[in-house]
Length: 138
Image (tube, rainbow, N blue to C red; front, side, top):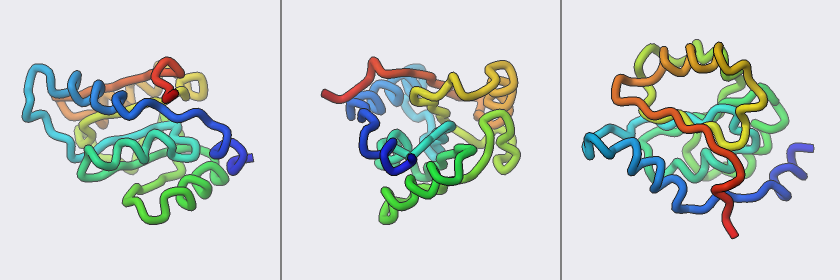
């Protein structure tokens, strides 16, 4: 299933990451981009788009098969994939993440628990972005 998902899943416009970073750095152009986190990463499609813009990218998902497909699709791309629910990011210390992105995956988690955990791991100059299919490539 994960392989078919990877093959058929639409891709996001490349300008979407630029838009996210412009928002993140709007008030402070020096806002850091050390760690980008893509929760509910699935097969890592959006996590791969984060890589050129962040020192480190982490993708999380609860599906072993999705993460395995993500690793295979990005074997030469430096992304750390972690099996973890969005509501429990205990492998990340407090206030460490610069940007969290949820790409068409918010329906998979418990919103209140996720937001609490996102607030815990995000740095003070934080950005949390949740988006869906309107950012698709054509």
